[in-house]
Image 1 (tube, rainbow, N blue to C red):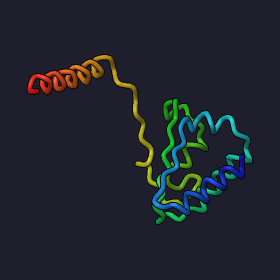
Image 2 (image 1 turned 120 degrees about the horizontal axis):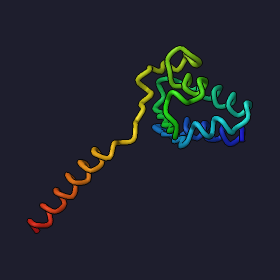
Image 3 (image 1 turned 180 degrees about the vertical axis):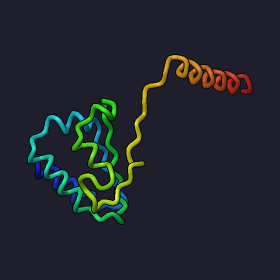
Length: 119
């Protein structure tokens, strides 16, 4: 698994601008061995902050329930200070309420219906 991570980071650096998408990062972080997590952290710290690389990670759990070491990767000065990461790099998106879902769907259905009337 370490070799796969190293290869992925090598490709990121080779093909800039690039994006590394890590879905379900919280699950991955909990299930991989410590050696893989250490390799990942080292590879992150080796990235040049001026490179055009976007690391996009998602988690299924809310921020308060995530492993502290994982959250620290995306905060300034906690684990990886050389990356110049600001606290604004963590965005928590909560599920919308039923009322917000209805408002969203009704507005889109209304727009779609009005467009079909003009055809």
